[in-house]
Image 1 (cartoon, helix red, strand yellow):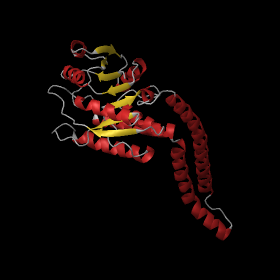
Image 2 (image 1 turned 135 degrees about the vertical axis):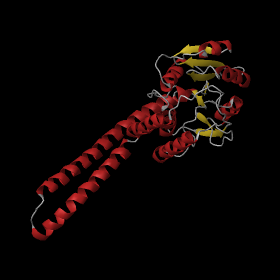
Image 3 (image 1 turned 90 degrees about the vertical axis):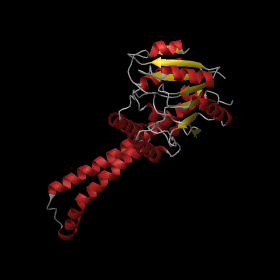
Image 4 (image 1 turned 120 degrees about the horizontal axis):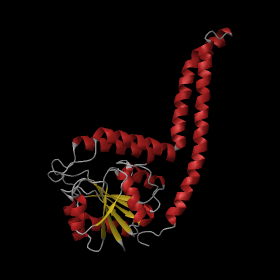
Amino acid sequence: MNIAVLIPCYNEEHSITQVVGDFRAALPDALIYVYDNNSRDRTVELARAAGAIVRHEPLQGKGNVVRRMFSDIEADIYVMVDGDATYHAASAPAMIARLVEENLDMVVGSRLHSEETGAFRAGHQLGNHLLTGFVARLFGDRVKDMLSGYRVFSRRFVKSFPAMSTGFETETELVVHALSLSMPVAEMETPYFARPEGSVSKLNTYRDGWRILLTILKLLKRERPLALFGSICATLAALAAVLAGPIIVTFMETGLVPRFPTAILATGIMILAFLSLTAGIILDTVTHGRRETKRLHYLSYKAPGG
């Protein structure tokens, strides 16, 4: 099988040589691609010196880089890893073996049991736990470390993935894509290390956490519109019932409607509730057809062990 190692990079001169070297040792027959995302340091020079194939993506953001990598590279197996030397290259052969032997489409390298001090910052760990839990409740509880940057993919996953995000929310999009199509996926515990001295994380806990949360809501609208608009319908209907309840009681007792503006408001809110439900039903039908098309495209590629 042709194996491609994909490394998105932005200002990783302190670690890129180690990352390329480690993966060359772990996967000697693989082609290693470093996609530079407008680095202002010596990342490109050092990656090329280490033996990687260096390419460039001018649109800033990890999601843009992932979209370009998945579009450009042809392979049977794809290994995607961050260029910060925090992931365990020696785990890659075992992850690939599991993908092939079990005919999986994605294997995630889980960082949740890392024991190295300072490897997984408390803020990042909490945010990862909250966001992963939110996705699990909405789309399915099959991945525990949703934001891991270390993954192995099948060709049929990569070529059916509709990459839309631009930044760090791309990991969320990858997981929801797998869950929405009920793809076979797995997680493997892998060692996780602290960044080398001088290397700085590009992830902003609050800004990127907020963007990931918004992405989850967008994916909910896109993949499960009936659940979203049904919830809006239920909320509006409950509010309308609360407003209309006393008016209905008064009308039953006296035959009068003393608070006419409130009655109009309750009626308007109930109309909005049913409009939301109607929108959800229509969008759910569209989503079902789109999912069938994605599934057929996904099935046009053979399984990793096929």
